[in-house]
Image (cartoon, rainbow, N blue to C red; front, side):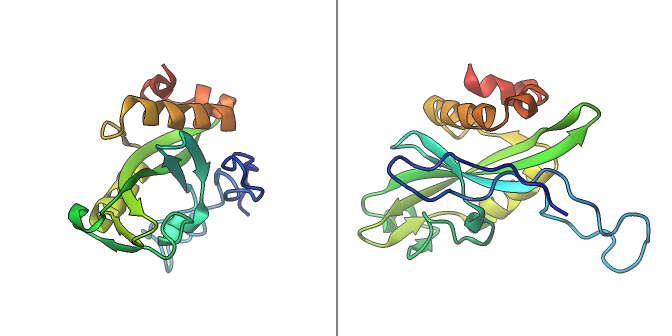
Length: 179
């Protein structure tokens, strides 16, 4: 069974919660039996976080797992930046949780750019980048250098405020986001 933390980090003025929370660790259905499904990847430990650069806010949006986040709904995405006339920058950050001897911690963290023009209903994102970055997050990589300092700080503060103990057990690369 999955364990979830409750997320109360909704955007200002938004009454509903943005997602359920970080997936901590669930049982491995392929553990030990060696049968069907062994070697398959599980997304149980990955949580998508949206960073809104303009509003300087971050929140969990589980819809992003299937490209159905609030930001992505009703938007036609193309791999060409020129197709988005008045872009607003968002970052989709794949956050992977792992469990160490002291408890769960932020293990992998990778950011993917999204540009959205709500009025034109157009946007830019690179689907191959999103898939590859999710994979790298699951492998414990931290790739956030594409984000500007303020966006990284918003992300770091969100992670720390969401669960300070988990944040403190994380690696130095992740802890440096709030400095």
